[in-house]
Image 1 (cartoon, rainbow, N blue to C red):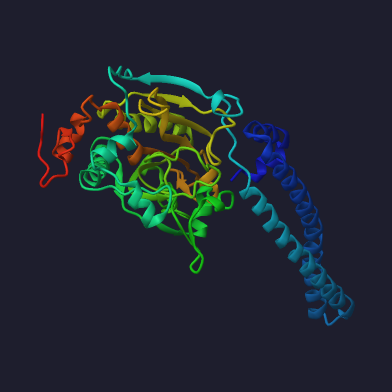
Image 2 (image 1 turned 90 degrees about the horizontal axis):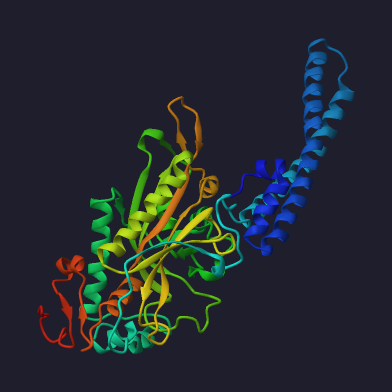
Length: 439
């Protein structure tokens, strides 16, 4: 949530920043300015009436002690009470409208974020690894996975409809191996505390991190309980400390979690429909950090490095993209996307595929959930929150299958994953009886 004080004192600065996020947010901003103006006008009437009521009450008390007539003051006090009740009710409604409008405004991008309207204006920061050159026709991960018996999308559709995956045998083991590999890396080497949170959360929890009210059509909900299936573990992890204050000495504080994630993917009909790329249910490791405001940008670089290490350990070529103002997520102030090389996509020509998004939200989420830290002098300030995928599990499996495929249809297992999967190669015989290692 944007600081209302900033909007009141520097409306033109905020307007320009919101305009850089995309013109679709400007009408809501102008509506907010109007609603706030109306609210302040009401409050301007309330304050002098309250002052006069208090003055009249004091004078009435004095007259009563002096046994003087206070009838006129008593009538005035009753009139003031009636007027104040009406104004305070209007002020309460006005405050609700202002808060509701604030919740629909995106975070303000940091000054260093490149200006742009969409993905074409994002800026490449660096690359790691060199995409492999193949001497044979490259298959995509769905073809490879189905021929190796790792996944079954026909039966998944029978169970749940389109955009769901069913992993079988070693495919299921590989998913579990990737989850364990990522969690072990982040907890033992990067200092994160592992959490296993609920997958269903309240409306207040969704609102706290910015999913509501903006993205309700993207979410799966249980109407009777008004609970929502999480679209990412960022939601429960960040809200764990809602309305709390952390001691500054405990910062930075780092949490990670494996969860299933659930998204309707509204508005993407016909896009990325094959395989594990864009499903309604998918697994992901999420990284969340709570930091001091002055450390926010430094911590974003560190968080991004932690996500990169997953891809480096697996030997998967990737690039880091800094998102422009028009392509960032609703709550973000600055974002880096990691895009892994997917050689089997685009008809075997390959393309870059997002596999992680790492962001600082500055104090946008903390203001929504009342999350602060206590300084050594006892004063309190809003924390900065950050999160990133560390990383999307299904897309990682897809990238491994495509990057490590061989001409005979087998797939080499990256060395970092072999201790978890107890295999060094996937073959068509992988599912026959007990899996055996092959060279």
